[in-house]
Amino acid sequence: FETFAALADKHFAGDLSGKLVVSGGMGGMGGAQPLAATLNGAVFLGIDVDPARIERRVRTGYCDQMALTLDEALALCDAARTAKKALSVGLVGNCAEVLPELVKRGIDVDVVTDQTSAHDPLNGYVPAGLSLDEANELRQNNSENYVKRSMASMATHVEAMLALKRSGTVAFDYGNNIRKQALDAGCKDAFDIPGFVPEYIRPLF
Image (cartoon, rainbow, N blue to C red):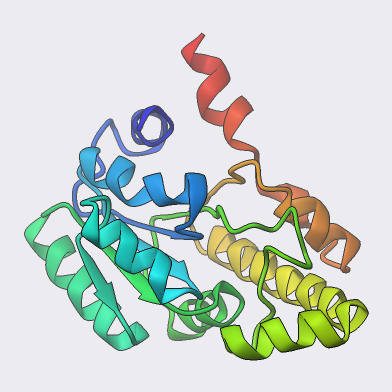
């Protein structure tokens, strides 16, 4: 909550109403993101490959709605933005596929961040192009190939965040190591995305 509040103060005159915040990862700590965003008045689009995680957040009141397609999710978000109504939508999808599509479509995103399990390229992050079952099978049968595909997807993921940043989106890293992973996978500008601590937390003290 305090991170999004500090972000609002720094970039949006203290008001996130009508603003679209996009992030990935709704398991573990990432599951708090939808509620933190809506408590600050924002419209939140959270992306996770595992529908069970989104369902759990909806069931416990941390997320308002679940969407199975990007078109459905964007329609919900657009209506909420127009009405300046706080809303959180959990989209079943892979960030390395969804974020490049947002860039391709020229979607107006106000804020982009990420809390996928990027620190763990084998057991946490799921590569683009794989279902959960396919990912589990590849993880068990060819862990080296899995990690290679995972790292490549993180580079694609961060490159899309950078593309959004260049178009005017506020982008920040949320401490999950994705910038370093993307850098190692060939994304040279990964650290052009600032970290949340120096940007928003440290000034609070």
